[in-house]
Structures are given as C-alpha cells and as structure tokens.
Length: 570
Image (cartoon, rainbow, N blue to C red; front, side, top):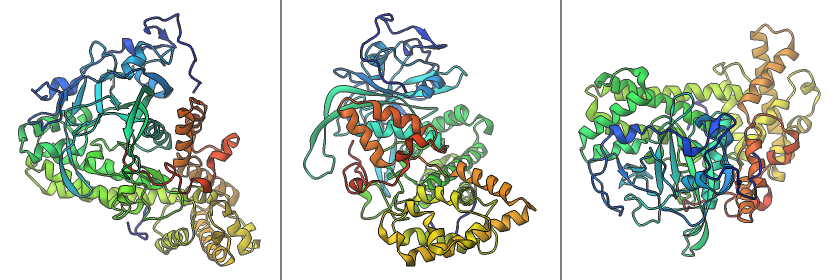
C-alpha cells in the first residue's frame, strides 16, 4: 500500500434450571433453539457428495458432503452473544448444560437440520493448495430468523469431516475464545463480519503444537457456533473451476446470485459480470474498514475470503498496536510478511484475480472481469480516503498538500513505537483554536504522550517533529472551517470531534485482552470475558469505568504467547 495514495452478559448460572426439563420454553418473545425452524437451501439446491463415508478423501462433483458432528464428552456453555440470539429469534439456554447446549456442542441434531461440510479449495500463501474444505467446521443448517432471513449455524471444532486430511476436526479453547470475541467486536466496530452465537467447552482435551516447535500439549477443547447468511468463499468456486466441474460451478454461482444478490437479476453471462463487480466492491469496502481500525487478518488466503464481503475465519489476527505497515500477527508469515497490515489491499486484489479466473468459464466478456478488478481498486481507494478523512476530522481529502500531510504522518508513526488506536483517538484532543499557538512543541505533542510505548517517543527531537506536523494539521482543519464559512470555530470543532469519534474506536480487542479472557476461562472464571464482551459492544464510547481496557499493551504482554504474534495452531 502506498503511503501517499490514500483517500477518504450476564454470568452463567451455576445450576441447571429444573423448570424447563426439555429446554424448549419460550422466553422474552423468543424460542429455544430446540424449536427453531430450518430451511436448508444450500443442501436442497446444490449437488452433494454421493459417498457417505466420513473419511479424509478427495471429493468430486459436489459442493458439500453430508456429515454429522462428532459428540463430545460434556458440552457446557461458557458464553452467549445475546444480540445474535435476538437476530435468530432464539433465547439463551436456561442452563449451561441441557438439550440446547447439546445441539451447540454437536451431540444432538434437531429435526430439520441437514448438517454438512462444504467443499472448497484455495490459494494459500500464493500457492494453489488444492482441496481444503471444512475440515473442522460443520454447518447444522439454515435457520429462519424472525424477519424471514436465512442464517447458517456452523459449529467450528465439531469433529472430523472428509476434508480434515490428517487433522482431528477439533478446536482448542484459546482459538475459540478469540473467534467468538472478535466476531462480535468487529460487528460493533462497523466492520462487515460473520457473527458468533455461543462458546462451549467440550469437556475434552485437544493436543496442539502451539508454537510448531515439536512440543505438543493437551489443551481444553471448545466449539464456537458461527453465524452468517452464507459461509461460501472464493475457494468454493476455485475448486470447481480447477477440476473443470463447470456445470456445478454454474449451479453454485446461480444459487449464490439468486439467494444473496437477487437485486442483480436472473443469472446470465452479463449478470455474472455485474456479480463479480459487486463482490469486488464489497471486498474493497471491507479492506478499507480493516485498515481504518488497524485490524490485520493474518491469513488472507483465497479460502478465507467471503463471497459476501465479510470478515471470515478468525485465526492469528491482531490489531496494530505499534504502527507498522509491515507488521503481521502470523508467525508463519514472519519471513515473507505477505499478509502484513500494509499489504492487505494488494492481497485482496490478488485473491479477487484468482476468483476472476475461476469464474471466467461463466463470463463470455472477460472485460467484465477486468472491470470488476478496477472497481475494487477504485472502491478501496475512495473508501480508504473517506475513512482517513474521518479519522483526521477533515471534511475530505484532496486539497493540495494532503498526500504529503498523510505520508509525513505515517512516517512519524513508524519512527517510534506509537499505538495506532490511541494516537488517532488522541487527535480528538488537539485544540483547533488559538490555544495551540500558545503551546510550545513539548506541550502540544505531549497531548499524545499516551500513545508512545518507549521513552524515545518523548524525546525532544521526536516531540518537535510531531509538533511540527500537528501545527500543519491544525492549519489544514482550519481550511475546512473557512471553506464551510463557519465563523463559530467552536461549533466546527464539535462537529469535527464527533466525526472523529465515530471513525476512531477507543476500545479494540487487543490480543492481550483476549488472552486474559482465555486464561480466566481456563480457571473457570467467566467474568473477564463477560465484561470484555460488554465493553466491546460500545467501542466508540468513552466508558470511563473501563478506562484500563483502552490503554497501551502492557510491557509484560510484549512477547508473551498469545499476546503478540500467533501461529495458526488451534
């Protein structure tokens, strides 16, 4: 990414409830999961695997394989996302154990459910990896919410499927907590994302080599129930194109368009082109939002790209703490840094190019595919410039000198270790009136001292450079006020501050916060994750009672496992 090419819960009850022995009562206008209605269009409208043996193997001429989750020893509810339950029209289980929890743990399949694992392939780290598929995720079915919308319920960590290869199909607590929390945190940040309904402990252990250093350990097992309109990825199309299963490729494309892009019209060669353009547009918006909040996905392979433009598959992700365009949270990516923060737009476009190749058999005019890729670039640049303007409190970007102002800012942020979230939030405190003129460099730049991780950030030389930039920035904001003919600078400053508040979160899911929630749950304490969930529902609010959750990453977390870079082990 070129630096100068940037545009505008309540605690879980201890004892099972005895008033609802079958777990199917109606509570608060919602129903128990046991009463949910399912209508499984993916299974009914698309070809499935004709082989029924649940063993790792190559699958052909199919979009999915029917498979039943493998039961676990003792499923127990650890966390529940109430807003997602409301979205689905189902109530929280009355007890941490019971029939509904059995369903969410994979021990019970309800009437109407048609569980399956999806078949897809993908490019991983730039190389074609062949068949991948849902190796530990099993979709239970599509639930019809109160508004008639369909939502897939998918269990991650539900056991082996034909796509598990040599793996066990399970997930550990640490990765499950991270996915559960991040899915919801991203939603409240305003970033398109899959959601998470529940987090369960399985009562079993799972062996994982967390550091890939030859020292596997037994860890607590867990299952997350993920929710999305669809979990179809770029890779679902890639595997069909790679094996020249063109009839199935067309059927999948027609299904996705009819179910999820009906506004584009009936499927046809021209519709496919418009559909690809819309996928590119959504992906451009998505990546701009990632960049806005400092989110780094960590594994942007084509099998981790949603056809709906959602953030999907939360693995070794992280939030930029020390601002660094080259930072990656993925230890597997430490050498090449393919998926680092600054590369995310370029990688998204590379992935879209792979999708274009997969869809090419359906589109007679390949110029439509080239146009879609142009749409991605234009959409990202416009969206990124827009959110950057909002982060800086500017009406728009495009004035003479704006590109230099931005380039110099990013240079400054990387000269010393500077927390991205705190820095941009702190810009809201910079005075736009004559007060700034009366402040010396140390005092003006000192307003942002909370963003610096090292004493180097407080050195006079750096403070002077930062103050110089801040004075240019203040002058630029005054240009906006003058252009708007706003004589009341205080009123303009208030509007600017509100625009910045909506663009710059105060609270993000820093890796060390997620790790604290993981460690607490390992000790049977759910208070940490409950509090964190509530705070992350309001990331743009001050919430002074939770101020410590908005601070810099503590020094003890700098190199602690789970608090900085992570592996894909889960």
